[in-house]
Length: 570
Image 1: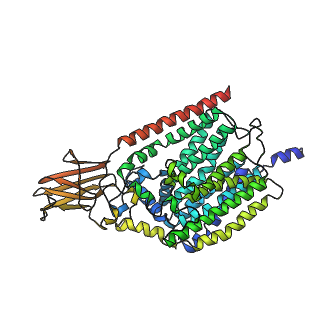
Image 2: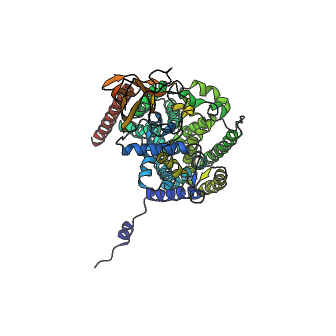
Image 3: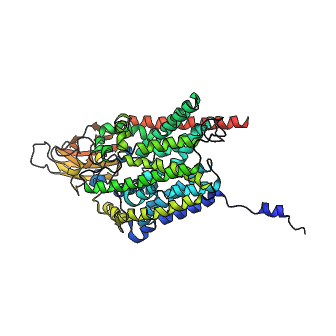
């Protein structure tokens, strides 16, 4: 029997793949991040109840057979609201799925671990195209534990934005390809799809993050088109942005169109205005000011880390090997990072009023999410140097006191998830959202514990309630049926807010529901005798258009990929 040669032995030894190493490291970092949850319970941040309520509501509707909910069943204490039309679906679908397969107290922890682990993997896919594999692994870990991620985990509990930030690296990777900034950049049609899909993923996770991604990528592509004097880059970039937005049409078109049916202006009420949330801004609300300073310290730390990494990287001023002598990706990345930093400062306030939809980002310090990604890029470049790993060590070290500050200033509750779920079991439901409240209603006035059906006098001025009985045949979130037997004409109030998408039939005849004087609760007039009321949430024209746009975009994307593969085979 012949002994294997040294070459054969070396070939037989398989090196651990880089993606597997970064998976393990990102998972380890994510677990370390959630360690305080095991001592203090759930981090009940600013948006925790909103997201938990959405998870439970969506999961309940799945049991009813509604795969893509639009209306909520338990918000506004059971009167509902069209939350799922306006809030992107990826985060609440993921959260709802987790509530179905694991103990409730574990859901936020697992959500964060999954999200931050994916963030590390996505960053690795980007960074390994810019640096060596070893440096990309360390840079990805820096991104997984950046201060913005800690702020969202411990104080903000904005699970949707956290998911969007995990997708950011894939968006930037696709954009760099379109801009010819990578050595293996593909100018074929499939490169447009590889950008559009993660870009759509960001929009389907969090709308403010979608606005940030849109402006950041538009700036990057404009810079590339100007510095490279290439109209082709501008055209490809515009096509990528358009395709990405079209893929989200099933969500984005109804959300944009139906804003006229809700109090969307409440999204910019006092405390939520950009002018009140620039870095280190103080207002009369002490708690708001303190949180703004905490967020500002996270943003300032990221800006300082980006500056240090950019100086130490030695990449600025170098020219790209694949770009024919054109300026490299590093300068373009720094331009995006500088713009993100500037938009957190008060002198850019006019831009927040002039640029479309920018004000709906609400908090200028949200732009630190883009600064964190650009920092990870330069951190990976530094890690390529002989002692560059020290920057990773410094980032890990400074994350400890920052994490301690955030944990100390957070709100912790060991029973937060069970308490939220108990609100469904008791039938009391949850508080509503100001900006999703249908027009003509003030959800703060809605009664708690209202019956599903209430008999009212025939006339609004009447005082005597007619003798009648109401029997609920079916009461699901998007479909309801009530049988009423009344001796005289009457009006029936449902525990349901009016909204243009609701369709109402009485004995098979379509009618327009009325409302109560104090709030916009659905009131249905019935004649004496037996009446059958049917109410269902219909698909409006804007939703149909949105679905068609998404389907067309999917066909275009498949066609572009097929065309790209066909060219590569020739």
